[in-house]
Length: 121
Image 1 (cartoon, rainbow, N blue to C red):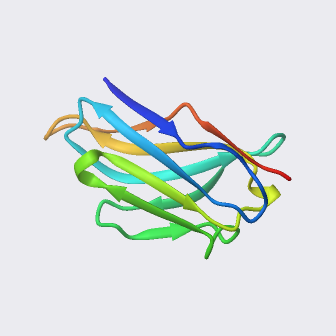
Image 2: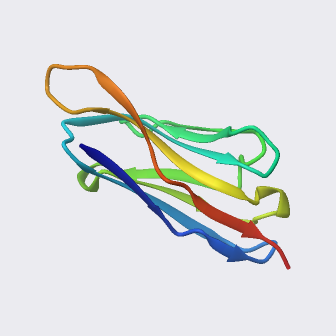
C-alpha cells in the first residue's frame, strides 16, 4: 500500500509564511507528477501547483510569485513554500501524486488526508 502524509498547516497572519510537506511511503517504485490542490469552504477543489519528476513546476495564477513547489525524490517528499499569504488562501490543502508501485505496471493516483491552512488576523 501507499500512504501520503501531509503536515505543516496552521494559522498564520496575512503576509506570513508556511511550508507544507507531503511524504509518500509504502510500496513505491517511482513517482511522476506531484500536485498540491486546495479547497476552500463552499468552493470546488482547485489545482494550486504541480511539479514533474524532473522538477518542472507550474502554478495557478492566484499563487504565482508567492508559492514555490519543490520535491526531494530521495525522500519521496514534496513541499509547498507559501509566502505573502492572503485570507483568500485559506483552505484545506491536499497533495496528490502519481505512483507506480512496480517496475512494470499501472500508475495510480493517491491523495493525502488534507491539512488546514487559515490566514487571518
